[in-house]
Amino acid sequence: MLRNDPNFSRLPAGDQQRLLQQLHRVNQMPEDERQRRLGRAEMLEHLSPQQRMQVNDSFRRLGMLSADRRSMISNAFRDLRAVPPDQRSIVLNSSRYQSQFSPDERGMLTDMLRVEPYEPAR
Image (tube, rainbow, N blue to C red):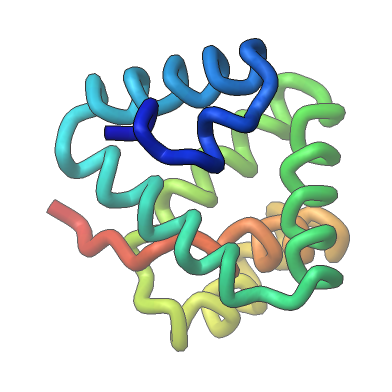
């Protein structure tokens, strides 16, 4: 179906191959992971260009942290996915999170969670 799309056909061969590989990877994901990623992509679409840049910058900065800080923030990120979006800032500003994370790290979490769909604890 994608190969029949005229816009797809106009792309350079390398871009076509990259898109087909991405589509294949998405189709191989477990259903819940696929839905989470699609939800994240949809939330990204609704952000302003400046907000998208902030989110991308926060993910980039996360990758530059030491392994132990990256692990702590990643764990907090996973935990906070289970917090309803309207309550995430309350948790992030709690004394527990203020003592564990710097204001910059909490800002990174805020940015990254901006596009993270709510995922209730199982």
